[in-house]
Length: 178
Image 1 (cartoon, rainbow, N blue to C red):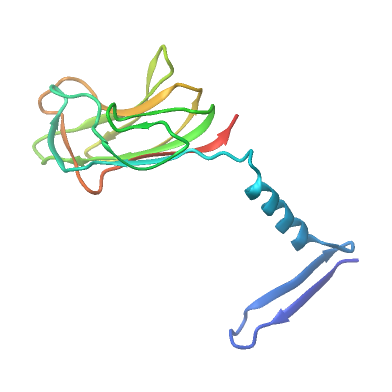
Image 2: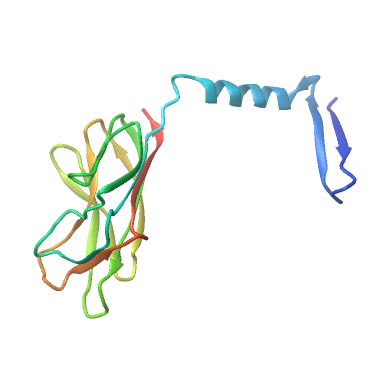
């Protein structure tokens, strides 16, 4: 038989707190708390996170003159891998990662197309494309150690132009490490 200990907080109408949740004589709340504590205090728990932006507004960035988008200000780099000179993120540990990127248009007279690119040491793969109508992209990529990810302009047209400003970013974080 299950037993739930419940008390009502009178100063917040309708709010209920659970003092204990007993299932078959076992306090489930304590088991959950212990599991969370064990997972968060474990030294084997690894997280990789980076946030890169631009140190100054980049206007009129042209595909016929440049390639990799210059997210050159590393705001956060937990676990290492974000390079503010090459504007790339190098995978430190294999697993699934989520990447996000954004850019803005120069003006309505220009188009822009930029890709999130995954390079595995042999092949470059376009994962997702940013454009005038899709300025923010998110990608989940299965990566291996030393793979790298970056954002790059596509084609060499002089009409392919974009801007990077205080709202532009390139971020990533590990989801599941293998």
